Amino acid sequence: MSQTGQHRPAPRRLIVLGSTGSIGVNTLDVVGHLRGTDHELDIVGLAAGRNVPLLIEQAKTFDVKHVAIADASLATQLQSALPGVTVFSGDQAALELVESVEAQELVAAVVGSAGLPATMCAAKRGMTIGLANKETLVAAGSLVTPAIRQHNAKLIPVDSEHSAIFQCLDGQQNQSIKRIVLTASGGPFREATKEQIQNATVKEALNHPTWDMGPKITIDSASMMNKALEIIEAHWLFDLPSDKIDVIIHPQSIVHSFVEFADNSILAQLGPPDMRTPIQYALTYPQRLEGCSRHMDWTELSGLTFEPPDHDRFGALKLAYEVIDAGGTAGAIFNAANEAAVDAFLKEKIRFGQITELVAQALSAITVTPVDSLETAMDADQQARDFVNTAVKKTVLM
Image 1 (cartoon, one colour):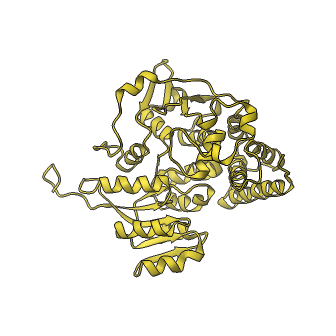
Image 2 (cartoon, one colour; image 1 turned 30 degrees about the horizontal axis):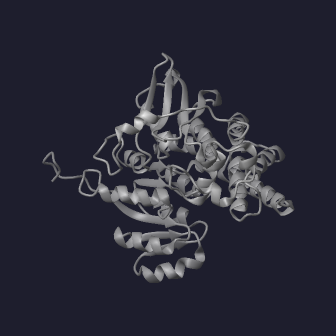
């Protein structure tokens, strides 16, 4: 019985894509926290890339009967450890999971454009999608947002910045918005010179001062490419033109974003840098329950600082606005070129500064066309990867 004396509703059925990553792990923490409440969730599907040990542990802990692994070579190991569980494997495993398993909710936390087909499928199935995969909207926002409307699906942002905007805009009309302002920690190179940034090592770039994230997102944060992706995502989430989206550097990561309205009033959402807060908000929206994230130490508010971003040292930000204005496949090119360049940097094939340079080159070299299908977006994605990979082969590190 619930506190109201009525029977609790049946648990909603949830699929988590990217369950072994930072967002996925925090999502399962929130699901565990919500047990015994009216917002209890039954995890019916988990998808991961390669982390079989953690995926096995998660499936056993939550008694999950359907799992997906992107690396097909690991399927036998996974199936052996989980007898009686249905295992999907290969590049389309997450898509097959979403297509095959009945669920009302999805948390999309796969890193990169790999999560796009499965998220599109969830939209067409009318699911409530907690979106932590910003690349989905960057690459194919013109497909995803109409699909959400057409199939009466719901899209609730999980990224802390977009969750903040979503919360501040609740019940507001778009015409009342003067601008939204996404906050950024500034990453490990906030005070570095342009030369230091250009030649930063992998170890230096992975040393984020605030957030604990996977390597790809951490590198994106260091180059401010993560914030560039968020600018484009905000354009699609909130239906705003590029000139109504700004960025401000806020190293403490306490204010997660601002909304400035036509009457010059400003709303902001604050909280400790803990992803469990926006995850829980997405899973329980529009209600708020007792949280499992850490409480705010109010003394931290005495040291909040803000500063404008340096577009010269962090050129990715300027590219984001160009991508919004170009439209079409520019987003897919931008995202895929960055993914390929980050991979090359992590393998120490290029300098850190070349990540943004290669993305800019791909945008200049590849023709932008309208996105009329998922295949069009994925074709542009592949063209960008091929362009960067070819350029990397010609690169001589100095």
